[in-house]
Image 1 (cartoon, rainbow, N blue to C red):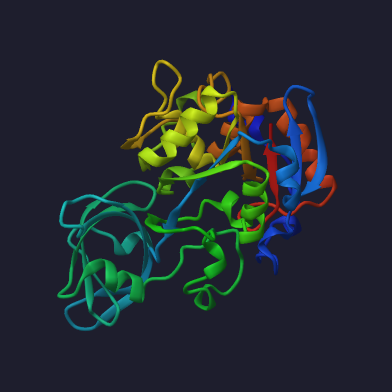
Image 2: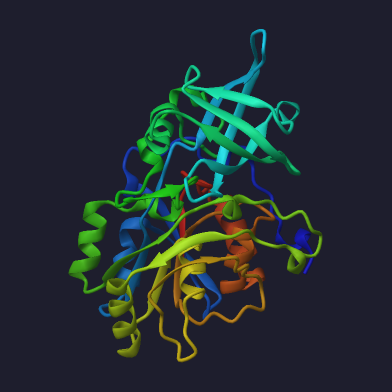
Length: 349
């Protein structure tokens, strides 16, 4: 399939720049795959579209302040400003990382960068393509704690506001975020509040948590013209025993499995046994889901509205059908839904 088939027109003013005052006040477009239809609803009506015995699967990953801002070190003085985004831990001691760095000219092999007034030093050990590098950190302090102190939340580039005012950005975490390791939020979960979760439980819907650390793969651009030629990068996940017990019991009894977010989909679909049950495991997945993929784990999906020509939109189109999704997106634009991370959501059943 051509990448251009996954395009749509989005007026820039529909890109949500701020979270709503109330997390659960979002609108929700409910898309029915069988009927090839949709209706406009609100997120708090979610419980009316799920039934007793269904299971909702949440991703409890927690965003850490993976954006570091510092300077290039020079013998005679401090050099120009640099910025890097921690992408992936590459060594057992936790000090070697793959990063996205800018400006590119500062990331030559052997270059030294300093952060936190010199408390953290990074040495560039390898320079790759598209701004990606490998660096080795040096510090006398605990690395993770120091990053938590001096780093900032890596907000998406389409959130166009003063990032220096968004050092921690608590609304860019889900209510149930607990497992540190993501560089971006699993944004479909940002809508949930205690009252929303309580209403679902009272309706007999099971709720379980897994962990899928959102990494570079989630926002990695598709650069190939042919979608099937895209390679998605590895992201780590964990499906715990407690979640598997609930999921498999519900599926055996005829309940539906509803994934919250595309990362949850990829973790679950990467953990299906030959008999259709979900396997408890820690692992890493490079699963790229595009139209033609046969879903074996999930029966429904709650997700936000995604960027044109993104792997996330491709996944959603694989689940619901490209034509239906593009028509639904056109409706959402006409009805002025809010798009992307802080935007409204879509329930596909």
